[in-house]
Length: 254
Ligand SMILES: NC(=O)c1ccc[n+]([C@@H]2O[C@H](COP(=O)([O-])OP(=O)(O)OC[C@H]3O[C@@H](n4cnc5c(N)ncnc54)[C@H](O)[C@@H]3O)[C@@H](O)[C@H]2O)c1
Image 1 (cartoon, rainbow, N blue to C red):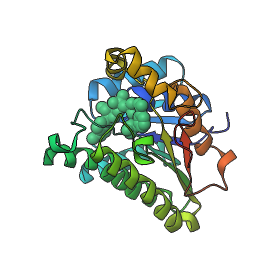
Image 2 (image 1 turned 45 degrees about the vertical axis):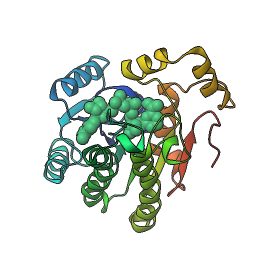
Image 3 (image 1 turned 30 degrees about the horizontal axis):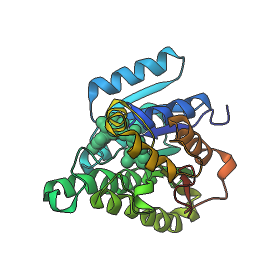
Image 4 (image 1 turned 90 degrees about the vertical axis):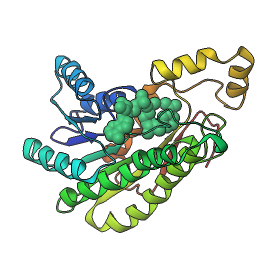
């Protein structure tokens, strides 16, 4: 229970990797705040964690909209007293096309706004709450921002690569306040039905070519990503800041 007494906010956490991260931090004793766009889904995730006996709250807000983010962070402090840990997880390719010529301006804006601007807005709002006490910010990048991924396109690469640069620069700026800023860059993980369908639709040959590029010869599991986040949220990583943990079975070695 090393995170007993800590308040952890995880964005985009009503399902998938974010929900697994929330469970990992809850198991370490943290009070959990689940953010996501969809109110109904947030409520379902909150009730399922509460049923497991974890102290959990939920706030639906769009991480790409400044007013919503500021109001959410204010309400979290009113409800929970403080914010110790922020995981900027909301994001993804958000059903936008992958190939350059098919990407419309609104696709580019959506991917950059949710992944990169959302990380900026949530960090900015949370740092103002953490400055007097210290804290941990964990940004979710991707293998797609670390190397040329075959699964994702240029908008996603720009957003997730931007998150790595943002992580380093912010770590330098807020280190003196005892705020650690690190990133996790997952490889391909079947985090829900949509990715499961995409994987199932691939031929055995295509699946094998993905697996052949991974030295550990398998996809990651959601808990394996959540454990990296749990480590960065804990005291075990107190002397790490500005780092990126590549959790990808060796597909990219930084
Ligand atoms: N699954 C993978 O293979 C993989 C690999 C590398 C990185 N990632 C990253 O991990 C994170 C989680 O991925 P996932 O696979 O669990 O995705 P997911 O689609 O299952 O979950 C993402 C969640 O973010 C929420 N969300 C989307 N836009 C939002 C917004 N504007 N404000 C608040 N919430 C919003 C969605 O509603 C959804 O619940 C993403 O940042 C993704 O890019 C995933």
